Image (cartoon, rainbow, N blue to C red; front, side):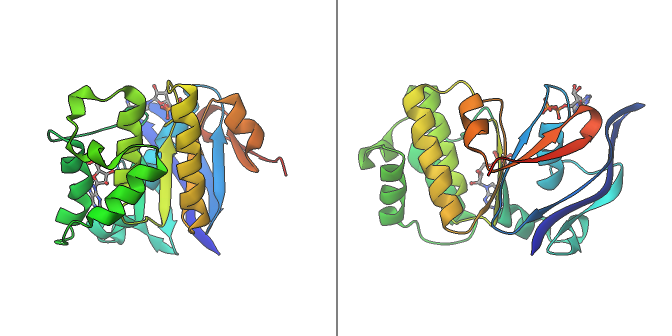
Length: 217
Ligand code: ADP
Ligand code: ADP
């Protein structure tokens, strides 16, 4: 079953064509890796799927519905985009990890937060840590677990391991694999050779969104 489908998607900025007539589908439960040269349009594709930007023409479908016609708040909870530079807010880790509960008018489940922190090798006391005191790798781990407190249907990862040290990278891989095993469809953009080598389902984006499908396994 196809969960996301891009059909004849064009993306223009002024007169410049960033994506030209791009069409492809993503199956429910897939782990898709987008590769290709810098500037090819990979990040633009993720932002379009996340509905952070809109195509100039063409349509993006989620379970067969045009995403422009879906409730944006509900869609955002199902299809989550994670930036290369983690976006944290407030003062503490707890401020960030409580947020998904607040927007749903739910009580914070501290046991769930503890177990998520444990998965990314951070102690429970980390909840009270100030954002400013975290390393880059710790910030990314907090941002990632914030986006999966309530498991999304689709997780869009825009080079989230770029710049992380080996240990943080390994921990993030473990987290992403665990999310995938729980049924979330993963779409990642990466330049990391070790990630590309183990990827089973690779879509190569050439210039302006021309695609070339590859399968490693
Ligand atoms: P990739 O992720 O493959 O490196 P991007 O999707 O970030 O590529 O960008 C594709 C091209 O589109 C780049 O040349 C980039 O400069 C351009 N681009 C993306 N968004 C905009 C924008 N809002 N305004 C101008 N140019 C943009
Ligand atoms: P903003 O641009 O509003 O700061 P981000 O895109 O940086 O939001 O998202 C920050 C985090 O907040 C996300 O990782 C996610 O956990 C949570 N979030 C934001 N908006 C929503 C929403 N509508 N539904 C669910 N979670 C959300």
